[in-house]
Length: 108
Length: 119
Image (cartoon, rainbow over all chains, first blue to last red; front, side, top):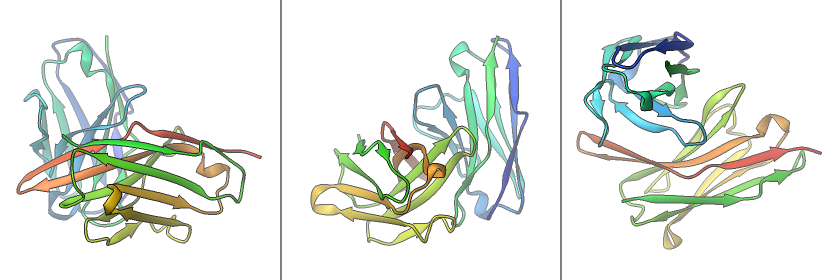
Protein backbone atom coordinates (compact mmCIF):
# COMPACT_ATOMS: atom_id res chain seq x y z
CA UNK A 1 0.00 0.00 0.00
CA UNK A 2 1.28 3.48 -0.90
CA UNK A 3 1.40 5.86 2.05
CA UNK A 4 1.02 9.52 1.13
CA UNK A 5 2.45 12.18 3.44
CA UNK A 6 1.26 15.74 2.94
CA UNK A 7 2.95 18.88 4.16
CA UNK A 8 2.50 21.26 5.70
CA UNK A 9 -0.35 20.27 7.94
CA UNK A 10 -1.71 23.80 8.00
CA UNK A 11 -0.97 26.76 5.80
CA UNK A 12 -2.10 30.28 6.63
CA UNK A 13 -1.76 32.81 3.82
CA UNK A 14 -3.26 36.09 2.66
CA UNK A 15 -5.40 36.72 -0.38
CA UNK A 16 -3.32 37.23 -3.49
CA UNK A 17 -0.43 35.11 -2.24
CA UNK A 18 0.56 31.75 -3.66
CA UNK A 19 0.39 28.36 -1.94
CA UNK A 20 2.52 25.29 -2.43
CA UNK A 21 1.25 22.00 -1.05
CA UNK A 22 3.38 18.90 -1.03
CA UNK A 23 2.52 15.20 -1.26
CA UNK A 24 5.24 12.59 -0.86
CA UNK A 25 4.58 8.92 -1.64
CA UNK A 26 6.21 5.96 0.08
CA UNK A 27 6.90 4.45 -3.35
CA UNK A 28 6.74 5.59 -6.93
CA UNK A 29 3.23 6.41 -8.16
CA UNK A 30 2.34 4.45 -11.27
CA UNK A 31 1.96 6.43 -14.49
CA UNK A 32 1.60 9.67 -12.55
CA UNK A 33 -1.84 8.54 -11.38
CA UNK A 34 -2.13 11.07 -8.61
CA UNK A 35 -5.04 13.40 -7.87
CA UNK A 36 -5.74 16.39 -5.67
CA UNK A 37 -9.07 17.11 -4.00
CA UNK A 38 -10.49 20.14 -2.25
CA UNK A 39 -12.90 19.67 0.65
CA UNK A 40 -14.83 22.42 2.37
CA UNK A 41 -16.65 21.95 5.70
CA UNK A 42 -19.81 19.89 5.37
CA UNK A 43 -19.12 19.09 1.73
CA UNK A 44 -17.85 16.08 -0.17
CA UNK A 45 -14.37 16.27 -1.67
CA UNK A 46 -14.13 17.77 -5.15
CA UNK A 47 -11.62 16.68 -7.76
CA UNK A 48 -9.22 19.46 -8.70
CA UNK A 49 -6.31 17.78 -10.44
CA UNK A 50 -5.92 14.30 -11.90
CA UNK A 51 -3.10 12.44 -13.63
CA UNK A 52 -0.71 14.71 -11.67
CA UNK A 53 -1.27 17.85 -13.73
CA UNK A 54 -4.63 17.83 -15.54
CA UNK A 55 -7.29 20.18 -14.24
CA UNK A 56 -10.78 18.81 -13.76
CA UNK A 57 -13.65 20.51 -15.55
CA UNK A 58 -14.48 23.93 -14.16
CA UNK A 59 -11.32 24.26 -12.08
CA UNK A 60 -9.65 27.66 -12.56
CA UNK A 61 -6.14 27.79 -13.96
CA UNK A 62 -4.92 29.21 -10.64
CA UNK A 63 -4.71 25.56 -9.61
CA UNK A 64 -1.88 23.51 -11.06
CA UNK A 65 -0.27 20.18 -10.28
CA UNK A 66 3.18 18.83 -10.94
CA UNK A 67 5.54 16.09 -9.93
CA UNK A 68 6.64 12.57 -10.68
CA UNK A 69 7.87 9.47 -8.96
CA UNK A 70 7.32 10.05 -5.26
CA UNK A 71 7.09 13.86 -5.05
CA UNK A 72 4.04 15.84 -6.11
CA UNK A 73 2.94 19.43 -5.68
CA UNK A 74 -0.30 21.36 -5.83
CA UNK A 75 0.24 25.05 -6.51
CA UNK A 76 -2.48 27.62 -6.02
CA UNK A 77 -1.72 31.09 -7.29
CA UNK A 78 -3.47 34.36 -6.46
CA UNK A 79 -5.28 32.96 -3.43
CA UNK A 80 -8.88 33.93 -2.91
CA UNK A 81 -10.93 33.63 0.31
CA UNK A 82 -12.96 30.81 -1.27
CA UNK A 83 -9.81 28.67 -1.46
CA UNK A 84 -10.01 28.05 2.29
CA UNK A 85 -10.38 24.28 2.53
CA UNK A 86 -8.60 21.04 3.24
CA UNK A 87 -6.66 19.63 0.30
CA UNK A 88 -5.97 15.93 -0.14
CA UNK A 89 -3.76 14.03 -2.53
CA UNK A 90 -4.71 10.54 -3.66
CA UNK A 91 -3.01 7.87 -5.70
CA UNK A 92 -5.11 5.59 -7.92
CA UNK A 93 -2.47 3.60 -9.74
CA UNK A 94 -3.41 0.34 -8.11
CA UNK A 95 -5.54 -0.96 -5.29
CA UNK A 96 -5.79 0.11 -2.56
CA UNK A 97 -6.16 3.71 -3.59
CA UNK A 98 -4.95 5.83 -0.69
CA UNK A 99 -5.19 9.43 0.45
CA UNK A 100 -2.85 11.76 2.22
CA UNK A 101 -3.86 13.13 5.61
CA UNK A 102 -4.65 16.55 4.18
CA UNK A 103 -3.34 20.11 4.29
CA UNK A 104 -5.60 22.74 5.78
CA UNK A 105 -5.33 26.03 3.91
CA UNK A 106 -6.50 29.09 5.77
CA UNK A 107 -6.90 32.43 4.04
CA UNK A 108 -6.28 35.21 6.52
CA UNK B 1 -24.80 15.69 -15.48
CA UNK B 2 -24.43 12.76 -13.13
CA UNK B 3 -26.01 13.08 -9.70
CA UNK B 4 -25.73 10.62 -6.86
CA UNK B 5 -28.07 10.25 -3.92
CA UNK B 6 -27.33 7.83 -1.13
CA UNK B 7 -29.25 6.41 1.79
CA UNK B 8 -29.09 3.76 4.48
CA UNK B 9 -29.32 3.13 8.20
CA UNK B 10 -27.42 5.66 10.26
CA UNK B 11 -27.22 3.87 13.62
CA UNK B 12 -26.00 0.32 14.03
CA UNK B 13 -25.06 -1.94 16.90
CA UNK B 14 -21.74 -3.80 16.96
CA UNK B 15 -21.78 -6.99 14.86
CA UNK B 16 -24.60 -5.73 12.61
CA UNK B 17 -24.28 -5.20 8.86
CA UNK B 18 -23.93 -1.73 7.39
CA UNK B 19 -25.98 -1.31 4.24
CA UNK B 20 -25.92 1.78 2.02
CA UNK B 21 -27.31 2.35 -1.45
CA UNK B 22 -26.48 5.01 -4.00
CA UNK B 23 -28.77 5.84 -6.90
CA UNK B 24 -27.41 7.34 -10.09
CA UNK B 25 -29.37 10.04 -11.86
CA UNK B 26 -28.95 11.28 -15.41
CA UNK B 27 -26.46 8.64 -16.52
CA UNK B 28 -26.34 4.92 -17.17
CA UNK B 29 -23.78 2.69 -15.55
CA UNK B 30 -21.65 2.35 -18.65
CA UNK B 31 -18.16 3.75 -18.63
CA UNK B 32 -18.02 4.59 -14.95
CA UNK B 33 -16.32 3.30 -11.84
CA UNK B 34 -18.59 3.41 -8.81
CA UNK B 35 -16.83 3.83 -5.50
CA UNK B 36 -17.43 3.86 -1.78
CA UNK B 37 -15.20 6.03 0.40
CA UNK B 38 -15.43 6.82 4.08
CA UNK B 39 -14.08 9.58 6.25
CA UNK B 40 -13.32 9.85 9.93
CA UNK B 41 -11.64 12.61 11.92
CA UNK B 42 -8.93 10.17 13.00
CA UNK B 43 -8.08 8.27 9.81
CA UNK B 44 -9.17 10.82 7.23
CA UNK B 45 -10.33 9.56 3.84
CA UNK B 46 -10.31 5.82 3.27
CA UNK B 47 -11.13 4.13 -0.01
CA UNK B 48 -13.41 1.14 0.58
CA UNK B 49 -13.79 -0.27 -2.91
CA UNK B 50 -15.27 0.08 -6.35
CA UNK B 51 -17.35 -1.67 -8.97
CA UNK B 52 -17.19 -0.96 -12.69
CA UNK B 53 -19.82 -1.23 -15.36
CA UNK B 54 -18.80 -4.84 -16.05
CA UNK B 55 -19.46 -5.78 -12.45
CA UNK B 56 -15.80 -6.20 -11.58
CA UNK B 57 -14.94 -5.20 -8.04
CA UNK B 58 -11.85 -4.06 -6.18
CA UNK B 59 -11.71 -3.80 -2.41
CA UNK B 60 -9.38 -2.30 0.13
CA UNK B 61 -7.53 -5.30 1.59
CA UNK B 62 -8.08 -3.89 5.08
CA UNK B 63 -11.85 -4.36 4.64
CA UNK B 64 -12.05 -7.07 2.02
CA UNK B 65 -13.15 -9.85 4.38
CA UNK B 66 -16.21 -7.86 5.42
CA UNK B 67 -17.22 -5.76 2.42
CA UNK B 68 -19.38 -6.38 -0.63
CA UNK B 69 -20.10 -3.82 -3.34
CA UNK B 70 -22.80 -4.72 -5.82
CA UNK B 71 -24.73 -3.02 -8.57
CA UNK B 72 -28.26 -3.21 -9.90
CA UNK B 73 -27.96 -1.73 -13.37
CA UNK B 74 -31.69 -2.03 -14.02
CA UNK B 75 -32.29 0.40 -11.15
CA UNK B 76 -29.16 2.49 -11.70
CA UNK B 77 -28.06 1.75 -8.16
CA UNK B 78 -25.02 0.39 -6.44
CA UNK B 79 -24.70 -0.72 -2.86
CA UNK B 80 -22.26 -1.24 -0.03
CA UNK B 81 -22.53 -3.91 2.62
CA UNK B 82 -20.06 -4.08 5.49
CA UNK B 83 -20.63 -6.88 7.93
CA UNK B 84 -19.67 -7.31 11.56
CA UNK B 85 -19.29 -3.59 12.18
CA UNK B 86 -17.51 -2.18 15.21
CA UNK B 87 -17.12 1.31 16.61
CA UNK B 88 -14.12 1.69 14.29
CA UNK B 89 -16.54 1.65 11.34
CA UNK B 90 -18.23 4.82 12.57
CA UNK B 91 -17.68 7.28 9.74
CA UNK B 92 -19.15 9.50 7.08
CA UNK B 93 -19.64 7.27 4.04
CA UNK B 94 -19.65 8.62 0.49
CA UNK B 95 -20.57 7.05 -2.80
CA UNK B 96 -18.69 8.50 -5.75
CA UNK B 97 -18.39 7.98 -9.47
CA UNK B 98 -15.37 8.46 -11.67
CA UNK B 99 -15.59 8.63 -15.43
CA UNK B 100 -12.66 8.68 -17.78
CA UNK B 101 -13.36 9.86 -21.30
CA UNK B 102 -10.12 9.85 -23.23
CA UNK B 103 -7.76 12.05 -21.27
CA UNK B 104 -10.53 13.61 -19.19
CA UNK B 105 -11.55 12.40 -15.75
CA UNK B 106 -14.68 13.56 -13.95
CA UNK B 107 -15.99 12.84 -10.47
CA UNK B 108 -19.34 13.03 -8.77
CA UNK B 109 -20.08 12.43 -5.10
CA UNK B 110 -23.12 11.64 -3.05
CA UNK B 111 -24.11 13.82 -0.16
CA UNK B 112 -22.58 11.51 2.44
CA UNK B 113 -24.18 9.26 5.04
CA UNK B 114 -23.14 9.40 8.67
CA UNK B 115 -23.05 5.91 10.13
CA UNK B 116 -22.60 5.49 13.87
CA UNK B 117 -21.87 2.13 15.48
CA UNK B 118 -22.77 2.07 19.15
CA UNK B 119 -24.21 -0.38 21.62
